[in-house]
Amino acid sequence: MKTIARLEAALAAAAILQCGCAVAQGYPAKTVRIVVPFTAAGGTDIVARALAQRLAENLGQPFIVDNRPGANGLIGADVVAKAAPDGYVLLLSTNGLTINPWLHASIPFSVERDFAPVTLAASAPSLLAVHPSVPAKNVKELVALARTRPGQLAMSCTGVGTPSHLAAELLKQTAGIDVLIVQYKGTGAMLADTAGGQVAMTFGSLPGLAPLVNSGKLRALAVSSAKRAAAMPHVPAVAETLPGFETVIWYGLLAPARTPRDVVNRLHGETDRALGHEDVRRRLAAQGIEPAGIGPEPFAAIIKADLARWQKVIRQGNIKAE
Image (cartoon, rainbow, N blue to C red; front, side, top):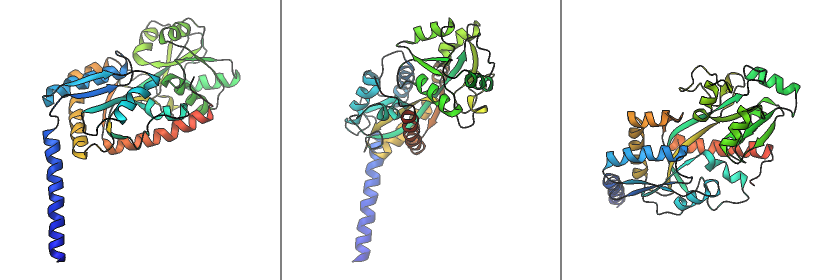
């Protein structure tokens, strides 16, 4: 009887495995919607559209981008959290997903429970740049200067909880310096005031700051990634002066929780394949975005670590959503 029971169990397991493989082999059988929780033309939208085009060509089914902006990414993310777990509604979001839980009193989903990480597709560092009038040629000199002028040096950023804001806050906390963080509603005004010298320094995107650096209106000091960026290899990383400092904008593909594992694995494999295509890499590089292709388990670990890190930074900085 035990032998028969074991045989039945083995047959059942084989049937489940065969069914899962059949699901993956037949996927996708219809249009796949990639929800971007931000407006069109931004970094997240650019990554999503580059991947969608290549995935559609490789898999023979439409992959459409559905922009659902609002509430700093919460509205679009909630759409996916509540979608059927079948792989036909996906989320392409940033690490704002790991920041929002600590900015708001409550959010309508759990980042760890309601999503299945698929691929951390790409990342983009920020650039720390100063006005030429600032007498600091590198991060070490900037930190020393800030310590002699506590609360006097101003750093611009684009709103509460944005990557530039949290990069500035992380720099303050890591270096143990007191700088005045000035928040702007838009990137244009932020860059104009920094280039004009009304604000001493900023953290911004590489494509956004590069023209100002190249024209001499700003001086590049460092990138925020752990290592130097491919787009600016001559510019050091902040971590070369402040070990452990790292903050990038990552772009990750996620599915609703309980999406079949074979579907998740296929999506990861095909996304990784798409990221290797020269056209995709060229489109991302134009925005200072570097392909990553990190799989489900490592991506889940990054989400967990980011949640803990931003909780600490936001609480220590007493940051609250407006």
